[in-house]
Image (cartoon, rainbow, N blue to C red; front, side):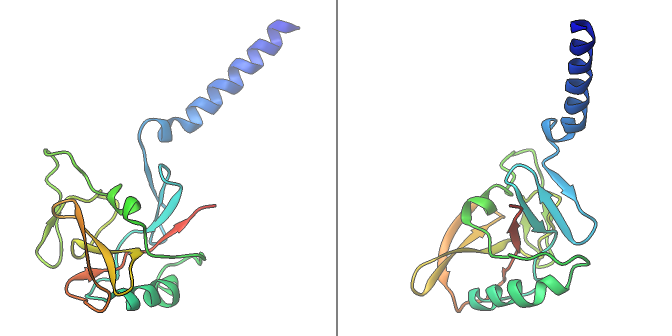
Length: 161
């Protein structure tokens, strides 16, 4: 009887391993086929592209909450601007990675699953009149006034939980 139990445990363990193998093997992202990408590492869902135009911080928040959800085929709630740490996790630091050229002519080093139209993206982190922006061309962040919109983009993200 214990031989049957150990065989069943072994089979269940192997099935669980092979079903989770893509995540364990480094498949961090899954394209959901609806304009979103699931990030298994962070436990979030990203839009697979940004807002496609210059936008200030206040308008970025409004676009993410009230416009973006209607541009994808499935309806999800709780979309927001990403934190600085979340955006940094999309930056590819490998010097061999060439990145890609955006619509605004900037070469950036973002993960290929997310297509940015320009390399400067607003974060949710702000002070009274400034908010942090992450630069995907060089991999650093800086603060700018929330009213500025020069080549800045909004990239929606939502928690899966």
